[in-house]
Length: 232
Image (cartoon, rainbow, N blue to C red; front, top):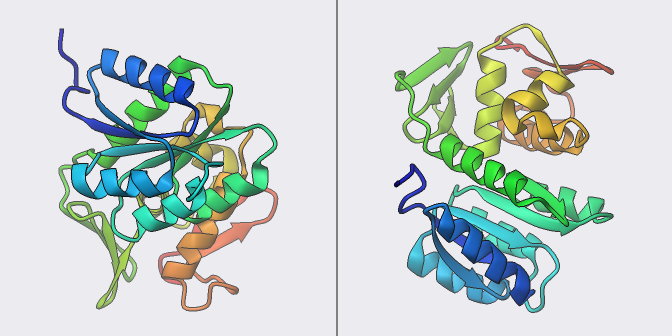
């Protein structure tokens, strides 16, 4: 039986051959096309030639690490990126998210968890909507090219930034709890990973706020969550 995964291209980057072998076997068995690379430099070459629809990368690798790989990929593409990290690399994980990664899975990880993250990332990046655009306050959200316009200015967001902003824009002027945002954008498994919100909200403010240090639109509700004020 074929699945929706058929023909989806996944690039796996890790310097541990055992992990790349396992991931290739598992992902291929689920209908994905898979290429592997042992470090970031060769992964970049594979990325530009093969154009995968999802990248799974380790963080600690020789020559070019996962953080720099995320940064290089994000400079030319909005393809979803999932990073793999070992427990205790919290600062590095935050740095990876800040460099453009969309999600991370901590080693050792369960295959079912990773596959769920892969499906969710591909589903979100390829999700279709009946609306071509959506306007709220001075913002226009274009779903076809997944970009946001503020007046005449176009802002390009990463997939996760886009999902986070769209969720908030669909609930204007309401306080949205940390838990609700985490579940809506990253799923139930993200409840113990609040750094997601801190990093991505900071990135959104840099791109959307006139003064990110004094936000008018994406406002913090201390100890509770965030509120989107469309009128500023």
